[in-house]
Image (cartoon, rainbow, N blue to C red; front, side, top):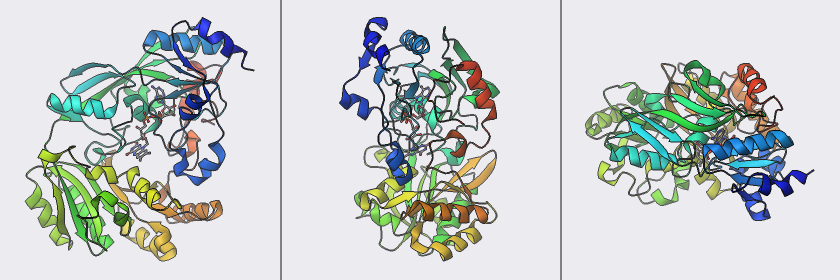
Length: 438
Ligand code: FAD
């Protein structure tokens, strides 16, 4: 019943609340349609109200209101998630946190921000002060810090700094959903119940993340006739610690043919590795490239950083986006190849699936290990076929973090037992983003 909605405006005096159909539809959706499986199942889900608090006090008020009336609450940053994370499966309130957008403090080596600050804004502000983000998703222009911490994993910078779990969140302020919501200050090991939680264990209002020293980045395309050479070059470059880097992305042809804005500068029929390396590393990079029969192609100098479309706009899940723009039949997977066996695994998959699976890797360093992670682009036909491909990958030791489910435990987190316990304590009525955690 929606009787609560009629009283909401009076009860939440002065808090911005939307009930018009257009806003409800727009702010109930994310980039779930990247998955044809999710697209079919989540299309019709919609909030009953969108509430957009402007400060912590209003967040607390809304949460207490939701508890009193037993209303589900689904947090939303910018809604750029890919797994329907911010889609309210059971209706209720979408809590739009984008107005909590104050950079509270930038100190030496860290930034403390409200959850709705856009990563792109923080990066720009930090760089003006001689620092920069360690890691960010390729959606940084729109995505919020809170949304990244609560629903993302890694991105540009992960080749040096790892993923969200590698010390890239220092502390957070989180509200519980109880009769009297508590303001919890979380740091250290306890953060594990809040990172990538889809807002199921609490609402994060403030986050402190570490910053790195600002570097002048050169973006370099390296081109290859053989995709295996591209991958091996990526590994060798990643292992060379004397080259500071932010991005090492091997992409199989024909995926580069979908990158329309780069058509003039990419050679046809070449596999590519997109890199961001520190200014002054070009000679070293060229030498490594040559030893794997790679040729340095297009270069964007540091003076043009962020002044033109950048190489990172074609990496991470943006690679899939360009493929989808070219042909809506494409979708993708998230995969972890084995460091010592990735070439053999690649050969097996290419032999079985050919161009049904177009390869896109992201070299990352996590837990002290260099990992060949991948976001292969898949030509989708049926769900059965998709799950056959997934099963085949798993059978040869390629881990799949299934992006075609909204369930937290299937989406790559592994065990979520401690999160479930945390949820019982912080959200006794199970109102936070219900249906996402088993
Ligand atoms: P939303 O989508 O709004 O929210 C994400 C999740 O967090 C939801 O479950 C939401 O309920 C919850 N949430 C949001 N704010 C809060 C809060 N304050 N408190 C509690 N819960 C909250 N992801 C990556 O990790 N790396 C990438 O490189 C990457 N590339 C992408 C490329 C494309 C083209 C697209 C479409 C997506 C990509 N993503 C990537 C996914 C997504 O863009 C990022 O994870 C992004 O950081 C999410 O931020 P957001 O503000 O849009 O969060």
